[in-house]
Image 1 (cartoon, rainbow, N blue to C red):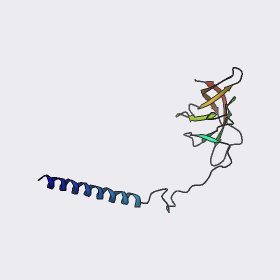
Image 2 (image 1 turned 30 degrees about the vertical axis):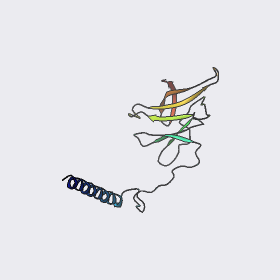
Image 3 (image 1 turned 60 degrees about the horizontal axis):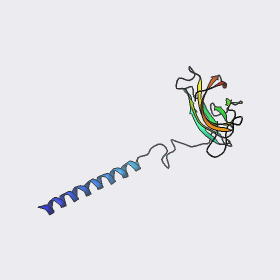
Image 4 (image 1 turned 135 degrees about the vertical axis):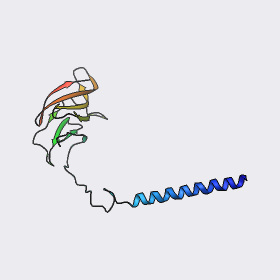
Length: 151
């Protein structure tokens, strides 16, 4: 009796494995965006030659804000074009090792609440210290007009 129970258990496990393998094959055979040979999604560079783009933030109005790690510049990408001017340049960026302008977020209610939030490493040369900061930049059209330290 014990042998029959083991055989039944083994048979059930084999059946489950075969069914799972069949589902895996079926899942991989379904055409989906981005799959090899599927032309529904095509990759194309929007902009090249950027010095260390590190963070992207997407605003509800369709603009893309991007940060350059070592320069501290934040730029805005419109409909596949970069605006002529820099949105904002973070001063006193520490740029060695894993430091620099590291994070970027747009307020969820942008542009009604016109704020861009930035996380960066500050090089405070006057005090000889390096530390991380979170700041809020107020947007006015396509430029940042002020920076408030939050942390």
